[in-house]
Amino acid sequence: MYRFLLTPRWFGINVFLLLAIPFCVFMGSWQLSRFEDRMAESRDAKQSVVTDEREAARPLAELLPVDKATSGKQVTASGRYDKQLLVPDRQVDDREGYYVLTLLRTDGGKALPVVRGWLPGTPDPAKVPAAPKGEVTVTGALQASETPGDNGVSARGGLPAGQTSAISAASLINLVPYDVYDAWVTLNTGDSGMKAVPATAPADSGLDLKAFQNLGYTGEWFVFAGFVVFMWFRLVRREVEFIRDAELGIVPDDEQREQGQRDQGTQGQSQEKTPA
Figure (cartoon, rainbow, N blue to C red):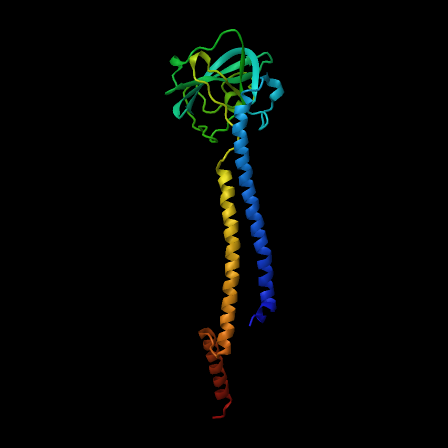
């Protein structure tokens, strides 16, 4: 009954089945491992933010450039405060407000963006405390430059003078006449009574869309593996039914029509050969 499985046509189908199932299981397992890795990265990143607050602050030069290993680390820098900007559309404790960003001119000439704190409501320069005068030393968590449109960072333009949507060297370099570090610092204690802005985990270390895409792909690969098995059993069942019908002398309708057409053609040829 099942000798047809050894025919050349079914040999190809069986080989495809034996290759497709392990491949689907492998790809599904790999996507699942990627999701689990991102879960672990998210937990480690959140734990790192808490742990970094207890570490001793290190000079800025030792932690640049900012990467996953140095983001959130405690850093210290000295200089004089210069231009001040407001960063709208920022939430702290689920409340809408804005960051107060002041550029710290270091001894090397470059400026370090420092978030001195957060205030509720819409940006209002009249409500913002003035930056301290003279030489200051700041201590806070080092953060990577923001990318507009990512992680809740606003990408809208046309802001009023004295405001910026993203804290990044690319955005600030057009607002000041000097070089800016490709990083920024959020103070551990808000300046002049402002609320301190909590440090965030490094980019690409949380449960973002990519993580859930990995989880979705995991399900797709396992579903496809099940579909391949289902189709193989369906084809086998149809083949067995066809063999049983043939043994009982039952011919499918399509084959009956083809046989009838062949019979009619044979009769026509016989009539043409018969002399009038």
